[in-house]
Length: 466
Image (cartoon, rainbow, N blue to C red; front, top):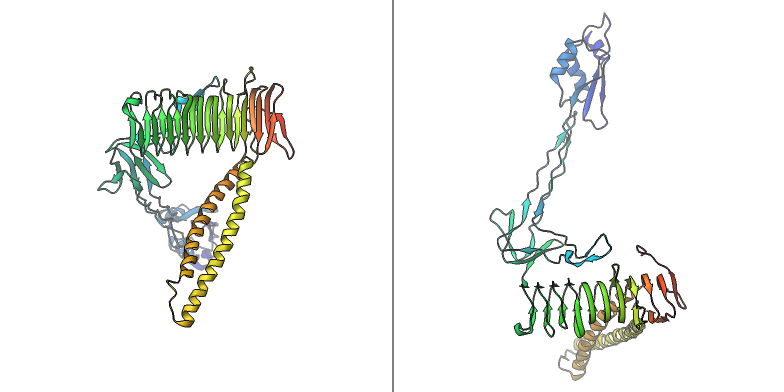
């Protein structure tokens, strides 16, 4: 009788073996009654041995719950561990671009170049990894949880890790920045007033911040950023990173600005500018500009008037030239001299490599003679001459290859460079793209100048066009 009723029990297991269900068909008069022990035996035959709800089994039997599929066993799902992580108590992603105001003007005071810290300030807190909990199916099979992974200690300089091994604090006053997986705190030279000739020049390893003006003839050099809140006069500025001039520069044909980073400024007048990054300003008036990135002269009154402005990646400007037809010349692309120099370097590099191969062959011959004759040629004049030439040519090759790499980068960056004018462009403007030149005879508006195989052509231009 028990065997007969046992055969009627239906068992269903979910696809992931995490749940098991029982269905008890109503037994006939001669089949007897279901019992807990019979149901446990059926579950065991199906391999179900974990997470069985014994109380529910008893209720099913006592309540004669027939022809209804009922959850009777539940496995334990794995709980994945949580990786360790850091909470940084400083802005790790400074926005060095000025904000565009609703009226279309640019707010240069919104540019944030540094994140200041003071000694003892908590800069980061580590949250250790949380262990995972393995799961198990209703059939007793373990389900392995993902383990929480610990993070490596923070590397960098200018901070220390506390005894709890979780808290990091600044060890010096300065500016903090996150460089990939490193944190670096560097000193900042800050002047709460004007930079004057009487106080001398500034040459600082780190960032320089001037909250006032910079007088003419003052030279400021920094390995980091230079930020000037007031007006920079005919001074000399040189930075290893970005330069921010919130109130602009009156260069007086003597001011110079040079940086390996980007430049953001309210305006430039009569200034020589050399920038490896991007330049953004409201006005460039009678300036000489050499930019390896893009020049963006934006805003409702953004204009380039007079001077020579060169930008490898292109120029975007609201107005180019003026109604007095002031000669204004712009250059985009790598320029003919870059391609010419690159061709010369490629030939020179090839010749140097071939010469080095010959020298190596000569040196190998001396090694063979040493083995054959058992005589040292270490001080042989001919061998020493080959070694001197090898050292010289190896250094020359390294220098030429580095220059060629830089020129190739410029040539690649210059692909598709154009001059985009969102407003008016006036007669007196000269457009140069690579080796081609175009002189405007008539006024134009909302036009883009680009290079075709045989000439510089134009097409309509509006804001937002790449």
